[in-house]
Figure 1 (cartoon, one colour):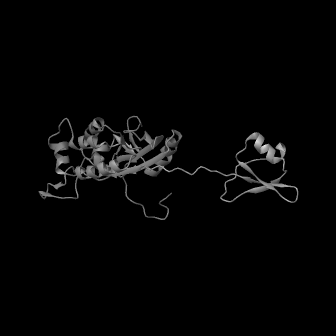
Figure 2: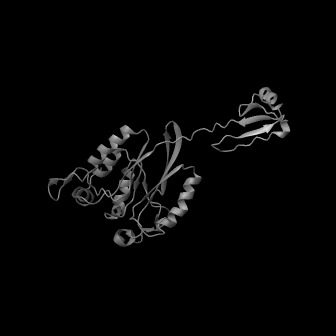
Figure 3: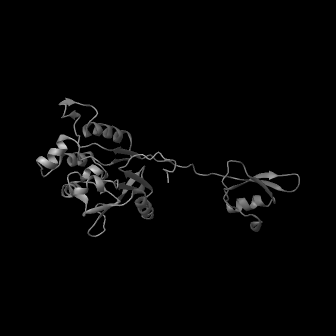
Length: 268
């Protein structure tokens, strides 16, 4: 009897019954089997049995990814050029939403997609007119608890020395997987980061990778030429995403400071 029963996993929503020797009942009881039930003997000398399928229900976990982009050095909801309140602006307003989402959801991630240090009078003054030991934008981002930032094209507008100092002052990594030093062919900034998080009591690795548009080599040629070079975004993604997976990333978040491609083969 033992040699006649071959039990293999079968995924099904239906009931699976089979005929076998009545001695199977004794075998089930003797071996305390729970995955097979004895249904009774038939009139033809055989007994009927049923598989007991108890597949665990799949579990789902929630991770809320919060992202900002093109803040352009606006902290307060105020347009200094117009000298008037403008509710469209500001990290202060963003932080209100961030706090609300963090209070509502246990598992959150906050990332920036680039172009955050340049674009307002405050950004210009702190970068060009009166540089201080601390930069207001970076201080605000540190206070808000960003998990990662992405180098956008406008991050280069004030030159590499300032950008490098702001990256150094940040409590989070700045990412750019397609930016390299001309001098040694090494990444100018971290290509990606893998964050260890506990999601609903279970450890999970979240990979975040950033990209800057290669056209920045034209737009900020005066700052970048001879110092860095930028590779294509898709080629860089094909190189580093598998590397992130090999390092155990369960989830990968791509922050590409680029526009939308609406062509038919965009997904490729």
